[in-house]
Amino acid sequence: MQILILLLGLVIVAWAMTRRKVKEIAPAPPPRRTWEAALRAATTQEQLNNIRWGSDGFETVYQEGALSGEDYEYLVGLWAVRWTELGQPVLGQPEHRFYGIIKLDGVYAVEGSILSALIDGTVVAEATVGSGGNFNLTVVQPEGADYTGKTISFLLNYLATQTATWTKGATTSLTLTIPVPAGLPPGPPEGREPIDATGLGDVDMDGKVDEADSILIARFRAFQVSLTDEQQRRADVNKNGKVDIGDAGLIDRWWRTGSLELA
Image (tube, rainbow, N blue to C red; front, side, top):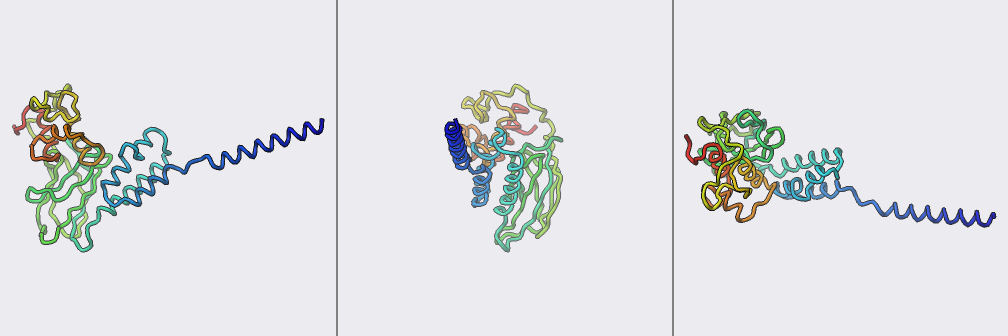
């Protein structure tokens, strides 16, 4: 009997040791480490956006419940630091920084929308709108240019009410409000027919033109989504050969009024 008990004890000990070895080699490294390494190795803001919002980015994994809130907050903080670092101008180039919130018709601008700064009608800087309508935008004066005293306008589909004066080395807090132009009521909830028979304006290819199409353009420009060649053709409403903020504005205008002309 004692021999049987001894043998049984040896079996239990061997089983426990096997389980311990399996447990020691089974766990995979935390996913946070993979994204952290990628964020630190990124060399462009486009790469940062793909790491965060790509199909296998940490935003997607967090939404699926496979990433802890603590790790998510850490990665978002690191992403913001790296975004700022990669957005730094070349040493010696004068700049004016802006930060704040932006609202479109009293509602916070959609996260991922593109805010543009213009001087003399030319886009001189762009920034991706964050959650709650927050933005950080830096207007850098390139070599050979002189922005001193120039008026900066801000555009997100339509011009903001506020403007600013470019000042070397300044940092300015702004609350930007963008009213929908007079005569542009809310578009029909069911959407409108495409602008022409080829589906122009129907970027998401659902058979109608609505606000979702202009938002899709904003997300494309923020590198959050990709568009097929056909979708990019449909998005190029102003027919300048590229998908830009002008297309988003025209699509929004068509959805609201059924016309591409200002009232």
